[in-house]
Image 1 (tube, rainbow, N blue to C red):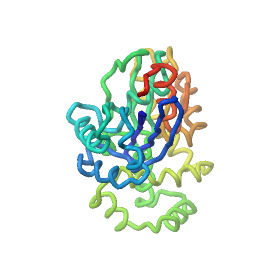
Image 2 (image 1 turned 90 degrees about the vertical axis):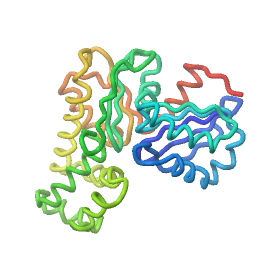
Image 3 (image 1 turned 180 degrees about the vertical axis):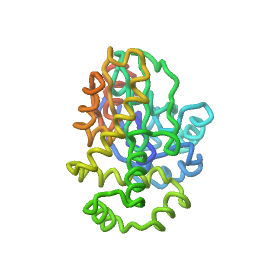
Image 4 (image 1 turned 180 degrees about the horizontal axis):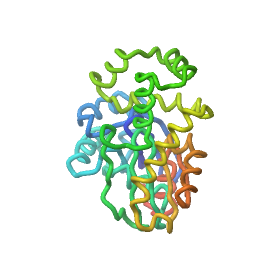
Length: 287
């Protein structure tokens, strides 16, 4: 059997494929990022996962695509953990940007974009990524991603720039004050995941003028910085994966039209597209 996994910083989706090339199971764990997690931390989470432990000995190959896996050093952090868990398997760890490209483009040229907790984009020529990955992380970059939008929302909350109704609603739903926000952002780990958690509030209130404007500006900034930098961005389809792209698809489509971008596929969870790629396009053998 093989396992195909796609991990952002918040959540990792796993799909198990049996010898008959059928889906034999699927589950989710917390997301992993070698910038924030050690080999031991990743191993401990997977080793304590009951569903995972039931099938580890039967897995012969692992295809893992993850946030932060952009260098050999970072890949090894995850690869070592996977090898400890899946003792009988060949493990392949790649960047989540490649996973997004394979899931959406298949073997056709296109621009693949990630809009989840973080954000990124790359040109795919149908075989491999053709551009250096420019993601700068949630402090310097991640324009349009959940952490970026959450940061903008909280900043306006603390500055007193939210419409009164939105201010009161946000404060009541999350029990927010300056001290609790500073504690989560500056003194606790995984501030990017905390900031991105406010995307749910943005999504459920996106008909509000202020919320819609905040999201629209953030997504337009993503397109300008990460998509329009490619010379041929108007000549190939631009695909998107991730929860931000999925839940704000109408705003994203408006922005794409504004920039003359051909919107391609939108996938909330690219792992399903990766399953299709390995079974139907790459046609990998399963032992």
